[in-house]
Amino acid sequence: MDSLGKIAMIGSGSWATALAKLLLNNTDCLTWYFRSRDHIDDFIKYRRNPTYLSDVAFDTARIDFTSDINEACLKADTLVVAVPSPYVRDEVEKIKIDISTKNVVSAVKGMVSDVNLTVTDWFMERFGCKDTNIMVVGGPCHAEEVALERLSYLTIGSHDKEKAELFARHLAGKKMKTIISSDVDGIEYAAVLKNVYAIAGGVVSGMKLGDNFMAMLACNAAREMRRFIDTVSPMENRDVCLSAYLGDLLVTAYSRFSRNHNFGSMIGKGYSVKAAMMEMEMVAEGYYGTRAMHQLNKRFMVEMPIMECMYAILYQGVNPKKAIRNITSVLM
Image (cartoon, helix red, strand yellow):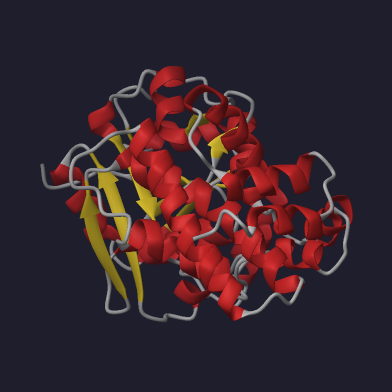
């Protein structure tokens, strides 16, 4: 195998836009699905995404735009799914053609709503996709820094090493380094959990509890992440200190680009959860990830005090100061 064939991007947000830019640096053309035809028309007119990362210019002559997801799937051999997790099910359920033999790359940083499945598991269950045709993209990597062409690293997870290496070459560049991994489940669960912990980091920041406590929170979050992933998907020699796990956790928990951190910060400053959500211009996926992890962990019963603290704040109306105070004695 020396090619992944034609590639289609499913999604039009900031992460989809950043990935599309990387792909177009290494391939001749790209099919790109947008829900809105007006959005496509504006993109073609201005040669850039008018809504997300609008400073990034594109050669639109090399983009085959479509507002029909089935047309995009028919034209492509490899589908890159970069839709915010709360919407991925509704969006992808529009696919009516057989995609069971196509390559599917999940760049979704969350669970599929209501069913509490990782995106790759859902594609295999819902569409009959083969696990050897499934890939996942992990961080640490903010879309904004990719757009600014700052040095970044992405991890490509797949059970087929050759396919992972092929897709990695489609993303790699002078400022984008790629890493290959076989830990598909671990990378996906880490991507969900780091958003949960980023909200926690934001709450701590908004409450001005200081860098010392923030460091303790991050250390304990990494251990909590390891306990959960090792329980749900046991794997020999998994190292959660690698970039797809700890690295992604740290950049999301601390960075001003992190919408989850900023969402948590507003709550820490006294905003209600509803008010903070209304203030956000983009989706804080950790809000939905917290509920999914809480429900999933009813089956596995892993000790996860930070995740449960966030669930108490976000879904049970517990005062943030009280909730954070309750976990200070278990951090170590």
